[in-house]
Length: 535
Image (cartoon, rainbow, N blue to C red; front, side, top):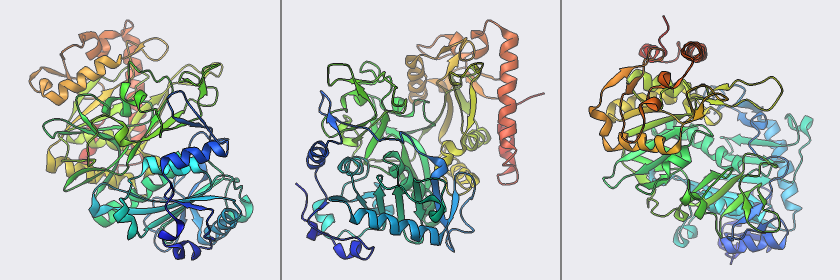
């Protein structure tokens, strides 16, 4: 059942113009939120008990509609660009007025107190107010959950106001269209209007932490997964969407610390979140049993269809979106690390899905290469189905998370470099993409081989093997690995057309060089030596 509304501080909400009444549900249990969603006909249960909902028009984040308020706090500290778009403070006040008026008109509201950061030294208390019970369930799943004793004295540091049913007047609000995500560091608020895509909530909080923690606490925020072995050996997995970050970090041999957002302090690694937000498309029990089994009562599944005539989710149906998602609390994964923390990592993996098929499936990076590839954040996306488009698309996302970095990427890169030197972690570049040719000609590297290479690195098996140097990227490539054929390890040997390999490798190398042209005056000179080698 929900906790009575009078047990939290209503003055905090009335101060913001919200009406507190018995129609405001505070700290509802997952069961209450599921039942409320069913009662309001906003979702249905699958055959495994998971709550299945549709997020409407938006099935992913809308980066063009995300803003940071430009004021005396942020004016000279934010890295203003197409991602971190400035919004004048008076527009924030207008949008906030629209949202509070709208929320006051709703027959029911849901309020949840939660927090981010598993390390208590950096804990960020959050209060979220929203109009849909299943969005409150998302918050319950994804953020860390205070104990009853902690709730008694809970005081929010930040507020999130979510009004997905509200369309804002764009001209009056200084925005592009009727939806917006607005972050104000002065007011310590996140405003969300016109979108029900739940990922906007978690990534807005992630952006806030990536601003606060480096500046105030010298903590590196990271878009990565993390797990820990029996010997208390932590491993980090950086990667953009589609590179296998969640899949490869979820292993029966190791405990999962978290699948997406972490901090690295002098005390070690800690999860920012209390749950996982995994992609569902093409999910199979045989390949990802832990994620598959987590889709049960209490989990929230977004934008999927059922197999006709059943309540069984069709994970291969992308008619709504390919970005189908499921959120669930971390304890749904067997053997998850509790608390979700670990010592500083011994191994760091940069995951890239190279659709050009020229990067080695595994290579060991020196210090300069680690920093170069971190600030580059490369992966490739397969082209769409439009006529005549057959080549992969190069994607560079600084620090493997550019959309969530309020500060300049050089700040995070410098912090990573300092931590690598201090803790002497081994850094590996892992290609989970294609081999034997580019997309359309070659084949995707089998998951079992990628897992075998990562396991070999973690177990120290690759420390005493022979390495060769990749002639285009300067990478140290192990020439043998248990359970992995040589034709996979050496990318050139897998190509039938050697000239095509050379030309494709040069093309990708030049793309790296071109992308890096934006950084030389902002990063240490030695990073330049970590890039491709073209004579």
